[in-house]
Image 1 (cartoon, protein in one colour):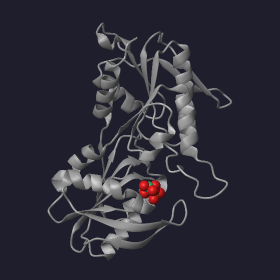
Image 2 (cartoon, protein in one colour):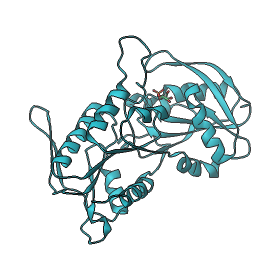
Image 3 (spheres, helix red, strand yellow):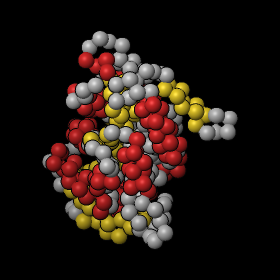
Length: 313
Ligand code: R5P
């Protein structure tokens, strides 16, 4: 997306890959600029066919693409767009990745495995000047990048949406030990206590609850996590909370709603009143009826604006 105005934004251009064009359009509209023209298609042999149809000489270019499923295709499309933009003259290139896929592969939990998050960070660092992302699964991933990272958080936005339903007896719940710091962050915004679940992952889809720390009896609970993928973590948390005497229904909040098909079905049967997510990932057509979305567009647009102010062509 590029500007056609004569103001200081004329050096700003925003492009979208195919992962989440709606979000990119909304961000561009907030910046009062027009979509950058590009080709995003597949060749007959399924190789990606990408082309930038703008002269980007000396311009500050932002490419918006969450690396949501199919993560490999979206990542490669983003890298091809970056290469095309650079060859079209872009002076500065920023990857805007609202959801950073492969983030859970941030360490070797078994020998023989790759550290995928690091590899992807290296690939992006080789093609981009800067990265903007939202609620990385593990904040330490920022250190994998050789370029500056603008790491935004949706917690404030989500907490604001939760606030009207949060009563004095509400308790925030971290569904695993990895979510403890996140839950504490919500707690600071909402001034609520936190309970913690000790979760063990048995497989990609199966988890088991080994314990719950906190006073949850007869309280309404809000489970907070960075992402919902298969829904296994949320479901086991909801079960443990109800078993422990929490009131029904449970509210859920997460930044990234990957929501595989199975997750939709599993969550539909659970005692969940509301699922609050952001639009970091494009919503699937058959989304759970209890889902409410909070848009990241304003925050992303403001950050682009802010980052662009430091640009000197
Ligand atoms: C795990 O460390 C993450 O924070 C999420 O709890 C997890 O990835 C969610 O996955 P699922 O919905 O498949 O349980």
